[in-house]
Structure formats: C-alpha cells, structure tokens
Image (cartoon, rainbow, N blue to C red):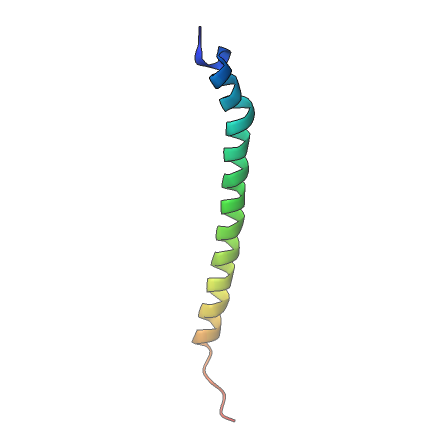
Length: 52
C-alpha cells in the first residue's frame, strides 16, 4: 500500500498540503508588504531634510 492510500496519507494530501500552500501564500504576501515598507523607508531616508 502506498502512502497516499493510507489514512494518514490521505489526511496529508487533502488537509495538510493545502494548509501549507495557504500558509506559504500568506508568508509571500507579508514579505512583499515588508519589502515595500523598507523601500519607502529607504526612499525617505535618502531625501535631504528641508530647512524649516
């Protein structure tokens, strides 16, 4: 019997793998947001301060 034919294998492929994929998508979205925020911060730090 192959792994996917066992109860544990079925659970892994039907429940665990989709949860892992969803979690990876969330991590990718958060990394994108983090990178955008870092880029904005770097841009703001590179601008010369204006005299008041």
